[in-house]
Image (cartoon, rainbow, N blue to C red; front, side, top):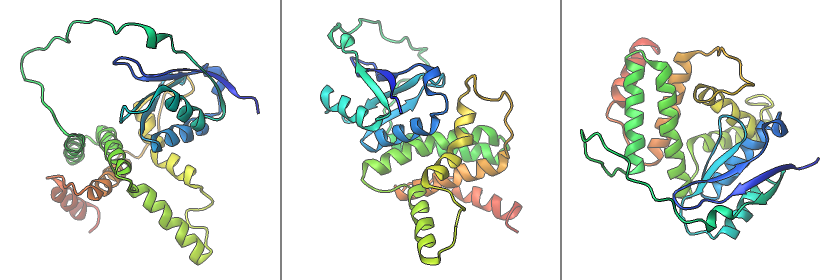
Length: 251
């Protein structure tokens, strides 16, 4: 299969890196894009697809890799692309900009990524309990994205990865088609599909979305709680959430 042409702009100054391609060249390649992004993340990068579908933005979390290492990593993860490298931005001086103005109502704070995600999870639970469950899905997913990154940074497996390993072990020991004929990629795509549809829209998406808001809100929170547990983090409103579920759903 012919490789898709793409251009890599490495991170420079305060800008993240970009890997760009023509939207028309990647129609039907969404699974490959998702797999490649996940491979890049496993190497310690933060990476996210552009909602327009014309590439990804990324950065290397440690800041220690040289450009040749970075280029090699991206090419290894996106083997289906024919990547050329644009280094012109690296030779330009950093832009001189005035500081972002502040409204002066509060002072800036420093917060750990773990505490940031824990706050998002607690807010997601509050939204769930107040009936604003559509927004709680996105907020819980954002928190879990941070938790998963922290877990992988520690060299551990996320709750979702452990869940899939359990499914594969059960398949081997019983000979049953547990979870049907799904592959790991299929399962992860299904788990993330609605979360991604709630955050992005492009010209290939339907303008309407059919979703069981309650179910997806509940499962988004449960997945995030499982990853919070792996980091030893406990949201303050976990007990009210579990109490509400017992009183209203599981009785």
